[in-house]
Image (cartoon, rainbow, N blue to C red; front, side):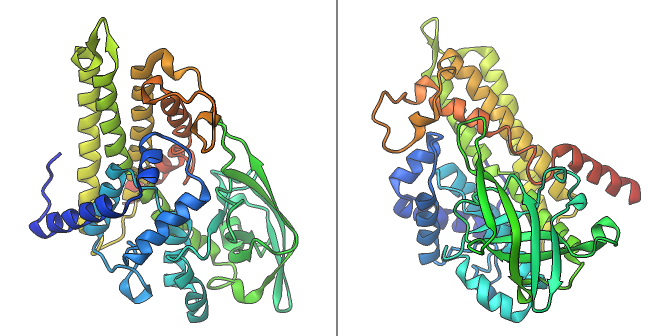
Length: 397
């Protein structure tokens, strides 16, 4: 795919490619390209390799320890990492709470928390969704009551990704139950080792337990861990979600999985010929390749405008298109694998498994990837909610 990048952008892209060839560990690359499970140590190892290169916080300003890259450079970095098979950087610190702290936190909070994110000394999780408060997040019921120099927190969060590894959670809590829904919410930073915090795993379709329930029972949180002003948390939450949704577009992952589909079609055979020679398969691949290209062009446009204004409703558009494309790519991989994708056990994708491990042609990783890709249209705000945001923005314009 050749798009209209400047000569400076192309030189930067070549620098990123050289770094990935030289520094991306082969075992991590093979796991990602083979749709195998990455454990916590894998993610931390890659983050520290990037940080040692000075690229631990690609989206951050230099004043906060980031690269100071332009939006276009960040886009190119994400694309090349995705194509090469690099693990995703953990978004919760880098792309969610980090930007919120830079904009709304006190100087003391920024000095305490920001330097520990690129080094992976702190692992953050997101305490937003609750039973009965997912898409309608403003109806959350977790309470925080001020008691002198602390808040006492009680409630439950759910679908909390990587809570089992995290040592900090940024958590939306209700601090004024009498105010209207959005007005009575605050944002607290909670130490996951605090007494009263209980994490219980939720096993998902593909056999993993990366999401969790988090129970908060009389958890004491220092008042100094309040971000910004009390009862203004909804403003911070919306700011954070704009960053999260843009990242869900996953153009690098789309490019990588498109390459996987093409290799699959050449490898799999029907009536003695590669599936890539089947006109119907070629049509499906060409159609989805055109849509991946269109998404990349949209991301380029958003990146080029980012210095003038925020993404606005574009973040919702990107979230919808990117998540749907990832699902369609996974479905196409499943179609090409055919019956070989049916027998699947998550044990096949784990380190240390000493039984029969299917290779790529047997579809084990494809089956896992297909199930994993049921999530993107739900998290970060369901796609149905994103369509409502877009419609409201158009109507109010």
